[in-house]
Figure (cartoon, rainbow, N blue to C red):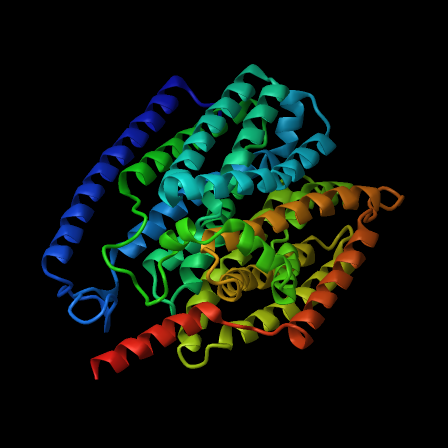
Amino acid sequence: FVASTEDYLRALGAGALCVVGAVWVRHMMDRHLQSEVALKDKAASRNYGSNAGGEGSGVRYREYPERWLMLGVYSLCMMTSTVFASELMSSQVPAIKLFGIKPYDIVTMMSVLTFLMLPGTILSELLFHRIGIKNTCIVGVGVSALAAWGCWYAVVSKSWPLEIVGLVTAGLAGPLLGNACTALSGSWFSIDSRNFPTAVGSGGAGAIATAAFNPYAVTAARQLPFEFFLIALVTTVAFLWFVLIYRDSPPTPPSAEEPSAERTLRVSTNESLKAMATDFNVIILLFCFALDGYGFGLILVTSILTDIGYGQHEADLVIAAASIGSLSSMVFAPVADRLKRRDERWPVWLMQICQGLSFLSTLALSLVLRPGMFYLILFFFFLIGVTTSAAAPFLLELIAEITYPAPESLSAGVALTVFGLATFGFVQLSQVMKDDVPKGGNAYNSFFWLQNVLFLLSVFLLTFVFKADLKRTDCAHQADKEEEHSLL
């Protein structure tokens, strides 16, 4: 299939209809929120039943139904960003032919994108404090859309340097949106129901998009221009949806702790970073998160499988399988939220279980990476996607808990930056540690055994060393008790 002019026009027409739909959704949302405010919080939604500003203030804690719309819009932007970031990896073979480059060039470029989380996070923190969370996200999604169009033009003109510029620009813009995932949960969702939105915003939505995209990624160089055009168009539509619909916070907060948007402007970034760096529990969680992101594993998939003797199609299937497994975070997260209402430590226990299963999965994968065992490779990559992704939202929320009152945008930014730097380091280390094996052998055997040792160490630290101090939850519950006492 090679796209015609009519195909491009149809895509543009569909994008225009989506923007019109966003305008209608914004109109309906504004009407509902205005009626909520006018009725003084008498509409049917979850009510926490206490006053936030003292007796007679009339402000109560509530979850608004629009929280799901905010999560959906944010997730749409994360989906387009994830597909854009993985596009070159998913179509690695035709891209090599189109640009006349080597496989190592693409592997290095993908690892550089993860390294860019560091300057991107620094930029996001500067903008969060100056223009707010929403405007920072708008800048991030807008720049990503421009970068996507730049990459499309690079494919049309067959310019690898221009493609690098577009990808680097997108890499710097990504944290401006991605670091706000836990801030979204803290602004719109109650203290007992944040694992699920964090799971969706931090990786679940991207996993859905990657799983849907990879099996249909093009395999011929002549098909790449239309693929890049569609991704640029969808990224632009997602940007317009975010601008038109997303709101920083609801009319009244969902829980009793200080809203995330206010803490972002009040709490010193330097003090928060110093507190994180000196807290061994935070360091343990960051170490585990760097492993559980497993970005280095997915970046290396195509190189690993082609070295063994498989092709691009098999690599795309493995990436899709791992992405489907990543959807587990959206299954386990609501279970964790429900269990947390019974005992606050349930997310900690579930995280420890997931980390142990991740170690066993990576160990099993190390043993089957060889020719003639593709379906076992597929299964264990899927299992790694299940176990590592299930733990990721628990880790993000726990980091936010024990670093409170540091804003969630900062704790998420630090976690994602550590993940990005670790991914970059692991990818480069994997090239240094490659074994000299005959064709069809696993050249990454030594690297995978190092990975197994690190996962085992993370299990030990989480089980025997880590101490969970749920400061944010304790603060919210203490505020509820004080307000209940003041009403008696």
